[in-house]
Length: 277
Image 1 (cartoon, rainbow, N blue to C red):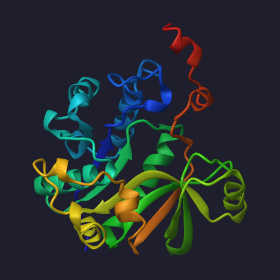
Image 2 (cartoon, one colour; image 1 turned 60 degrees about the vertical axis):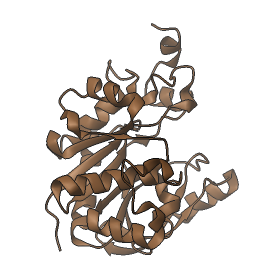
Image 3 (cartoon, rainbow, N blue to C red; image 1 turned 45 degrees about the vertical axis):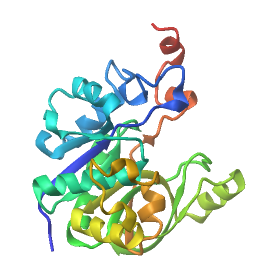
Image 4 (spheres, helix red, strand yellow; image 1 turned 120 degrees about the horizontal axis):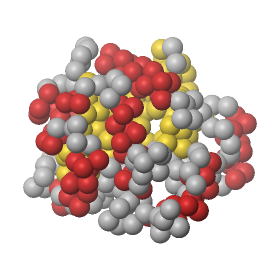
C-alpha cells in the first residue's frame, strides 16, 4: 500500500518558557527573529517547502498564536493554520491534525516537526525527511527521526535502536527518559542510541490504528471534544506503547535551542538580544 499524497504539520503552540525573558507568553521562541531577522518558524517552513508545496504544509498552534503564525507565514493558506481549542499536550494536538488533514486530503503520509528547532545542514535534513516519508508510505510503521548524539546530553530523551529494517531505517526497541550523566555516557558508548527529537512521519490510517490500540480515549478527538481530552504527550500515549516504531538517524546539525547556551552555540548573540539591540 502506498499513499502518494504528503503533508507536513509544523507544531507551533509552545510557550517558550526556557528562554525567558527573551521569550514571553505573547512572543515565544518560535517567533523570535534570531537568524538574520527570520524566526525559527519561518526557517522551519522554508525547509519543509523544499519538499512540499504550500498547500500541503500546515501549522498547528493554539488560538493565541494563530494570527502571529499567519503573519510570519503569509504564503501559507490561511485555512492551513490549525488551532487547538485548549492546551492538551502533543497527543491530542497531533491526533486532531492527523484526522483534519485526512478529511481534507484523504489517506496520506504526514510528518510532524517542531517549529522552534535549529538545523544547520538543511539539505541533509530534507534528504532524511524524504527518506522517512518513503518508508512510511510503504510500511505500516510509525516513523520517528532520531539524532545521532554528539555528547552525553542529559536534556534529551533517547531512542534505543535495534535491527535494520531497510537501508538506513531501523527498529526502535525502546524509549528512554532523560538520563543522568552516567547513563547518558553509557548510551553514547553503546553506540545504538539516538536523541529523541520529536519528529514523526506516518500514514494517517496507520496512526489511527495505533491510536485505537494504545490510547483509544483520544480517538474521538474533535474541536468540540478537545477540552475533554487527557493532557498527554504523543510519546507516552502512542509511541512508547506501539510495537511498530521505526527510525532513521539524522546528522544535520540539530539543536532544540532550549537554553541561552544552546543559542550561542548556533551563533546567536544572546547579549545583544537581551539588550534589545
